[in-house]
Image (cartoon, rainbow, N blue to C red; front, side, top):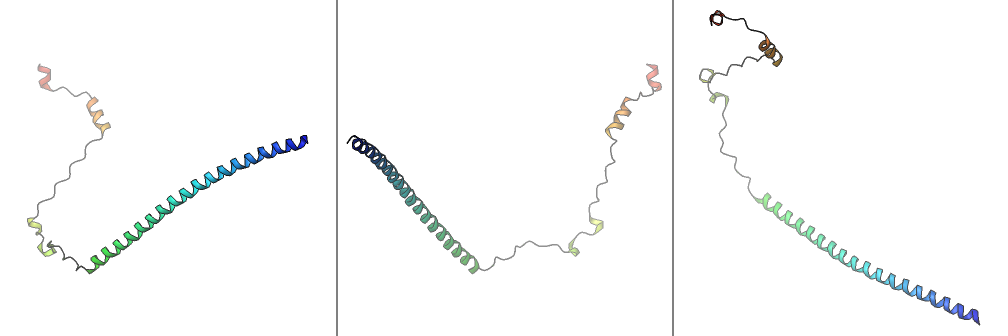
Length: 122
């Protein structure tokens, strides 16, 4: 009879554990179902928005294709015969002479200059 009491206690403990695990799983399932409903709602909204935008784009494309093309701009283009003859054109600027390189300028500055006659009289 003693083993019956122990078996009954073990079974009660296991039953409690199983009930606890079952409650945890039911809570998890309820949470997942709520998330599923939220995501389904978001997906439906997104699909409706996409369909609405596609309809709007199609309507705007229809409006654009129904319009007559815009007139060309009134910008006169010069032909070759309308350009100035070479005698009336402004002359091009002369190219500037190239400067000495930095090395050459430094060498020239370092050389002593010959004294002129004016310097000797002072």
